[in-house]
Amino acid sequence: MPQTAPENSPEQEQSSTTLNTSEQVQQHLGKGIAFMMTGSVLFAIADALGKLVTQGYPLSQVVWLRSVFGLMLIALVILANGKPRDFKTSRPLNHLIRSLVGISMTVCILVGLKYIPLAEVTSLVFATPLVVAVYSITVLKEPMNKGMLMAIILGLVGVIIVVRPTPDHFHIAHLVMLGFVLSSAYLSISARALVKTESALTLNFYIYPATIIAGAWFAWRDWVTPDFQSLAMMFGVAFFATLALLSITKAVHCASPAKVTPFDYSRIIWTLALGFLFWGELPDSVTWIGIAVIIMSGLYIISKGRTVKKAR
View 1 (cartoon, rainbow, N blue to C red):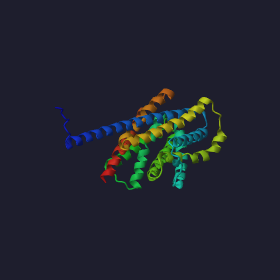
View 2 (view 1 turned 135 degrees about the vertical axis):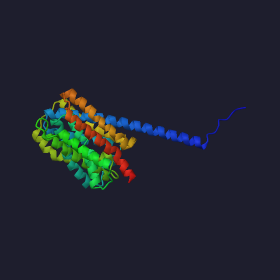
View 3 (view 1 turned 90 degrees about the vertical axis):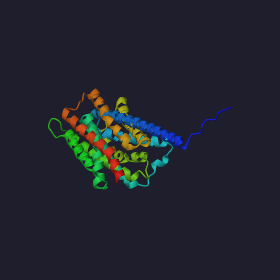
View 4 (view 1 turned 45 degrees about the vertical axis):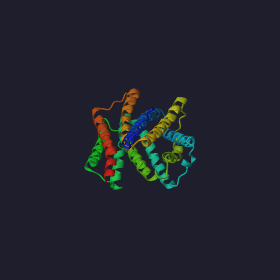
């Protein structure tokens, strides 16, 4: 007599569903981490290429070409996705302000790459969450606990350690990099208000026009005709940065930003390796302390900041 398979009880079905959901979450988290790590590597490569090209070509020319290539690549991605509506926006004034801030951001990061070690540039980039946290607490009136306050204070101390104004270490480019931090923080904060109506591609597409328009004359004035290899490296700065952007955007869509963003701090490993490989750069012991403090503070703010919001 044929036997029929026993039916699953409701408890077994619920257990199976929970298990499958848990596995899916883990798979999505794994993908998110992989995309974030990939984005970190790509950003490190873009920064290294930026440092290389600024050694042999005028800064104005590199800034302008970086923006032109960046705009072209974002436009190609929008068209490749079949979403020309991403070129449209209902917030032109917001994008104009962001584009003007984009001038500062692009100029400041390339000045930093040109004059100070790669690892120090990256560590100061990681100070951006500190400024975002300060703004969120003081202007947006988001809740703050003692741990968050301590992380902000320690992070700013870490910045001072990295930038420290001693004759054998300080360069004006260290202060210029703080301009990048403020610009980047503003773009991050303003994106919060725009993300409901604008896509990530739209937000990044409109960062470049002001730099292209305002920088055209300066680039033309200082122009040095690049050879093919140099032009390819200049294109590579925008290409790898755009790929990094897409990879990180994909990462935060796969999993919670609070869980995958900390893996972006692996970028310091890749920039240290590239800085040593191409320029023989190694941070001194004091700079190492500053880098470690900035990273730990940033990680705390990223991981605990969302917890504080949820507990509100």
